[in-house]
View (cartoon, one colour):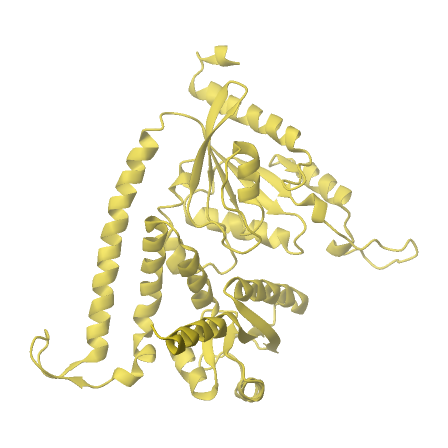
Length: 405
């Protein structure tokens, strides 16, 4: 490779890393504008994880997103004008766009279009490390692409002649592409089934040890907590979806052994394709005896995140598992203290950490604890509680083996 080619390669890589984006979201009539701002914060974090810098946000209040162009025609023209003037590289929409919406928007916009699903898939594609994770993400990617091929390959809508093609002269290139992708989807599903059978054998070979699974929203500190408890080196990073592969470690508290697994984080509007392809990875969750639901207490929308995780657990068939709720990152929790003479009703921003503790302890339905995995705050209490829960499960499974305790 000559020096010019090398320079072009470096320049291309730099350009990809320095892409500039605008975010676009519709505020539905029932939505809280402040909440939409927090959702866009998450979308910006997703963009940052993908190496994209956000420079502006556009929102529009509508009863429902336009089925044709997502936002109104005037708003889309405004966004297009601004993107052209500022030489924006990509517009990211905070919903999954239909194939027809994408095609219609592309006719107006001067830059590349990404929807939320495509952005998450791109992050998963870049972060998959093992063959299993890569196969799962590739499957999700092809299933997302299949109905959108006519938009992706409009420049290939031509007659394809010559010998050696299945349909003979006249077969459309788009149909060839569809067939290729369907074949790849079938092959990937077969590969996943083989890996699933291997992993099922591995799980059965672990004996009847009590299984504990860490679950939660993405970037809440599950991997950090896993490292602390199991004394392992699971990859942890302050980015969304740092962990895609399920990691299982054997942990021993005193003389009581059990298995602990760290799983992929959940997120609002998690693409259906990813839920389907990662269901096999989440077998560790479905087969767990106890779920440790880790929550980032410092996040403004932590209660919404709890609901998202609960909903996802229901979708994968793990909604009835016993749960231990762990409120992590107490060291980062902040609140706005009300003045004594302020008579307006208190909001969630005015709740102190003590107020939250009293509220959640008073609920009583789900055991919970407040801690900081990074600062190791209240970790001994967490170990003690977890030991008691695992011991109770073990004693119920092996009632004549209580000499261990």
